Length: 181
Image 1 (cartoon, rainbow, N blue to C red):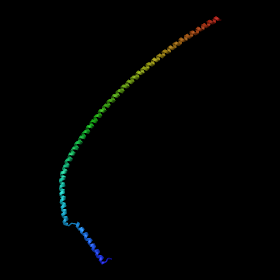
Image 2 (tube, rainbow, N blue to C red):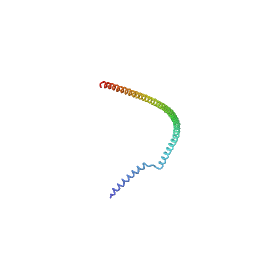
Image 3 (cartoon, one colour):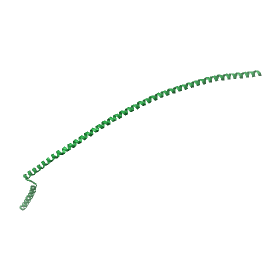
Image 4 (cartoon, one colour):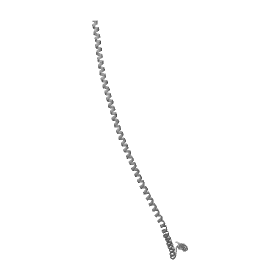
């Protein structure tokens, strides 16, 4: 649907655009020779870097290994010191524990002896108290018996005096009765 002139202008514009694009693409592209040269340069640089890394690695690794060995030796020494301290603390603790245990046993036996002595004293005091109570009961019983005896004797005396007074009054009353009769 284009005229001849329009079709020619459109085709020429498309050719110019395609040529411009191809120029841009070709500018970014390299030839096979240039690519091989660049690859060879990069490979030689990589080889140089590898050599440098190996040299650095050997020197740094040997330094790191030496330092690591020093640290391991120091760590082993510290570990041994800690183990010695732990053993020392354990033995000290066991010794202290055993001393405290023996001291507690001694205190326990001392307290047991004191308790036994106190029980003996309490039994002795109870026995003494029981003897005193028994003696007091005997004294009270003796005194009560003495008082009962005295009371009975006073009763008999009172009965004698009463009987004597009654007979005296009767004699006097009979005497008066005889006199008046």
